[in-house]
Image (tube, rainbow, N blue to C red):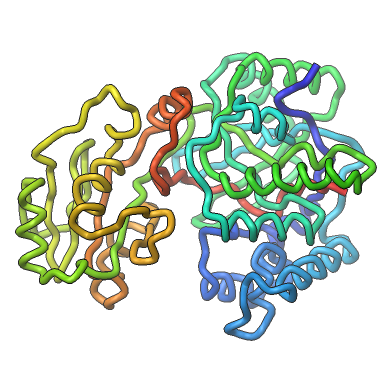
Length: 411
């Protein structure tokens, strides 16, 4: 029987080294932030996930030297016993705690076959350059280091098993970015592994919340290795994942900044926006408090926007707030036809706050910024179940999984 997931023998830090190793995901920090975070931490996993920080400024992040440096850094941490590999395949209960929020999920190796057949649902297209980068990263490290974040429709059977595992002493615990506590327990008895495998199979479907480039890259590496027969196991047919129940997931807004006004003056732009939106100037950051509400910051002024025409709610994609903004303003007024490829648009996770939108506009990095209401997990599932794709950068999940605590070797 083909299963959705299976246990794996993680490459991981020991408890004594976990705090030195833990790092934020490679794609939520820019190069300057990564250099700063890793500057006095030689064992930080950023030296593996963002190895360009160890090379001269201006180094092409996609150069051969970058990937070779990452592989050497991984070998260094293994040789120094900072990282060690489990001797047997396990599942891992994984909990993230920040403030009063707590979510408990499970780390496993997810089936590439299930991903390709649609049982592990995608909801976004990928950018070729970023997908190629993750392919080369996996190939050079012979490992998947950044877990794909999955979600599932909450099920008492799965959640009950994980709650029982989490009553034991943890295997690892470390504090990550934004003061998130990451706690990992090991499930290694044969009966427990079998029970959890079948409980996850009974879910029927898993949904990618974050990590489309990592999962797509893993599938490409698997296809290549199947073709060449270059390995002696099938680890490449599975990819590193952590899944949480949908009722524990926390979704933040994913906001937009645009670099210019498409040749318009500020007054002309606002006038044109007023043809499709009710526009109200406010004296404070306009954080949307309900769907179909948007904030706009331009020329040191916040505005509330409400569309005057609402899309049909029958279509789970066009009814999303990110689609309303794209179809009613970004494309027709600012000329952003494809936000996946247009270099004039940028995306800012809501965890950074509306202050970050103001900062980017005020310092001239962008001409205008838009604040959105968060897309819900159930919206994501509805789109995926319909076999459709969400607009890019529709969801920002917090807290983020850490890099470095669990790595899936495919050698």
